[in-house]
Image 1 (cartoon, rainbow, N blue to C red):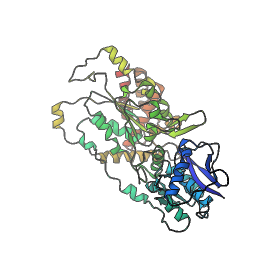
Image 2: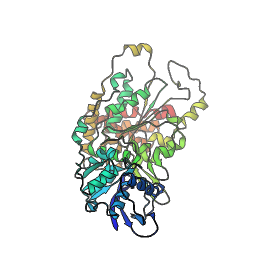
Image 3: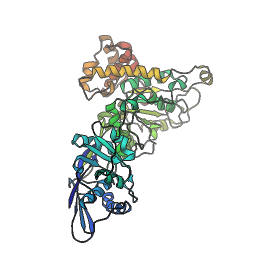
Image 4: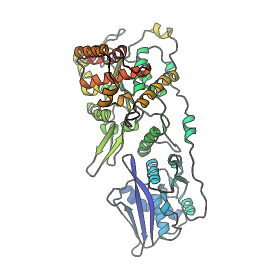
Length: 511
């Protein structure tokens, strides 16, 4: 008998339907899997056979053929164990096949018949809803993740026996439900707060501007001045994600397998901090079967690169295209996949190898050649793509003990959220632009018009400091954000002055 079961597969961040045809026929006892299966899919016949026996089912003694359609796209991973087992049971007429056309199912089988969690459930659930399916069978640990898709019945499956009894009408299962409004309303405040940071008011102001406009920022200063401390508190002032952004981020983490069990959504903006020994494939994504890298896992959040010059130069250079386009494309001989990577880059570095060049309290031991070699690890084109460069100077002991607690993160986040809302209202007609940092040339010309005195100031700064054309646009975007923080529709002279101040490190440290 022939039985058909529906499942799904992921390509990039989107999913497509996979139709699993199982035919239990006569001939030599063997199971043949066709349709470009990878090793994990080929091995599923052994897992399925043992799981069926341990679940109390009989196995077919003739030739069983399993076809995974479409046959021209490679199928990967153990997610087809459950649908293959259900297809074999339906082909052997051990369960009814009436519900199979309306359902999508996926899950890895243990030898005991237990259904284990798998990756990529959310995009497959979204595709199931778009394909008109009524429901989806998923492992218990993935149920909340799939349940965020409204209008799709999600059934949490513990074992193969439970799935078979449900499809055969012997037991009833209630669909899983997730209250999205409760998830977002129950987000707790971050433990790390800017009120713990004493001093460094200029750096905190620059970070507030960067967060308000989604700008990339580089902090330069001696060791122990609080660069990492400042960076790790940035999530506490980021505006909260909306449902669309949360779904985008959750899809990526679901595909990468970094989503925690029973997690419904990533409700907080991601904060990724890879070690400087990371490879370009680890940063961008890749592998024989491409998976998202750190830049994509930081989508709609923050990518923090501490000790920036310690990263391999080729790793830093591959950041240029993702920073500019907001997507990363990984090409292979058979196909290519595209992952979104719209993130805020936060970087920190010392001014020299020993870390004390320009420090008022300790003497630098580095030669000019060492300093130049150290700084040249960061190319000019990459530096141009970082909107804000800010110095984080060392502080004397008497300054530390005299200062009161800093401004709490909740107050900074409120101002940043208001500025972001002004930007969303402004770019309402441009669906692909969400903040000032994402503006293209047309948006810059339309929304960053300057008064005559501001134009003269910017012209003089460009002429004397020899900024590039890209740096010129960055100054305009940062100026627009500073104006938004003040609630000003017009970019004024002092907005330009502050924005130029955040670019002077180009010449001061790198010329």
